[in-house]
Amino acid sequence: IKSGITDFFGNEGFDVNRLEQEIIFYIEKLDIHEERVRLKTHLDYFNTILKEKQSNGKKLGFIAQEIGREINTIGSKANDAEMQKHVVAMKEELEKIKEQLNNVL
Image 1 (cartoon, one colour):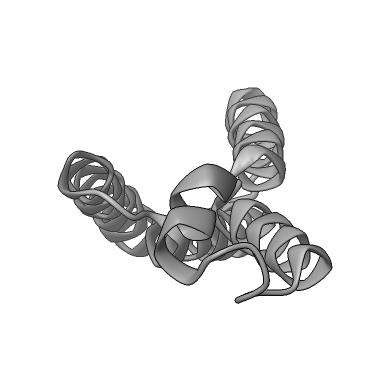
Image 2 (cartoon, one colour):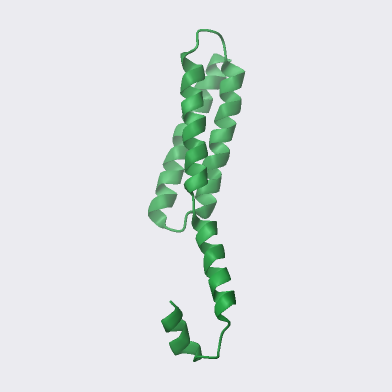
């Protein structure tokens, strides 16, 4: 990247430190690792609560909201069409879960 920019602007046409800061900023913005970890945690918790004998419909609804937030964040960070397809599929499945929860409540 640096050599391409140097070729375009010349050796003194840009601030290397600023370039590094911008690259780090965009890399962090596109990173979905934290969201994936939280999504997995919410899904595991949802499954745990689902297996309990007592009525937990409201709690499952709240967990589903958290799952939706993580999916939306992943969608906002997704920068390619294939990832967007996965996000849409996850949203679709989450809506089915919410409908089932509403039927039970």
